[in-house]
Image (cartoon, rainbow over all chains, first blue to last red; front, side, top):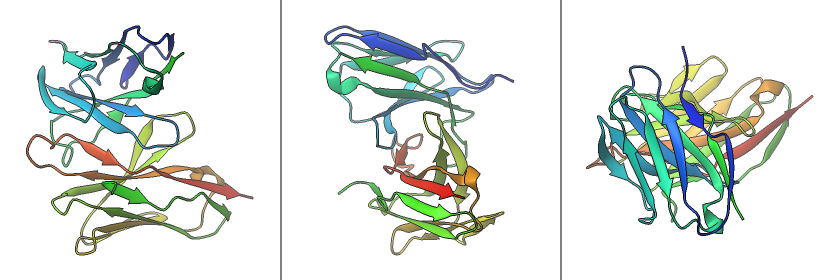
Length: 115
Length: 113
C-alpha cells in the first residue's frame, strides 16, 4: 500500500514567488495536516483538513493557504515567499480528525529553499 | 515559554547504554502524548504513545506525570540503529485543536560502537 506521497520532493524558489505543494493521503484517510519543519526544530502545525473542511490553523500568516479536494488529496499554497519560508514541509494523513485516537502518518516532505 | 520543551542534547552514548530523555509541556489541558522518531532527512514516525500508567515497548519505556506536566522516554541496551532525533509530541485536543500535534524541538541521539 502506498503511504503518504508528496510532490515535489525538492523545490527552489525566489523571494516574492508563490509555491504549491501537493499531498496524497493514504487510501481511506480523510484527514490531511500540514507541518513546517525548520532545520534544527520540531515540525510546526500549519493546517488540518478533514472531509474538505478546515479543522485547524496554526500561527502562520495569511500568505499560507490550503485546501482539500473530494479525493482527499491536498494542496498547500504559499504566496510572497520569504527567505524564512525555507523549510521541510510535511504532510500527514490520518483516518479520523482527532490526533488522540488516529495516528498521523507523515509523507517524506517537500524541501523548499527560498533564495 | 515553549509549549513543549525537551532536553537540548545531543546525547552520545556507547552501544548497550541506557539513555533517558525528558520533556515538559505547558498546557495542562493536553490530553495525548507521544514520542516520535525522526531519522536524518526523513519524516517523523510514531515511536510510541505515552499513557498515564506508563508503558513499555521492548527496550523503550515511556512515562507520563500529569501533575508535573512531564514526559520521559527511556531506552535500554542502546543499538546503533537507535541513532535518530527523538521528538516529544503533545495533543491538546481542545476546541478546534483536536487534530493538532505540538512537537518539541527534538533531542539528537547518537549511539556509537
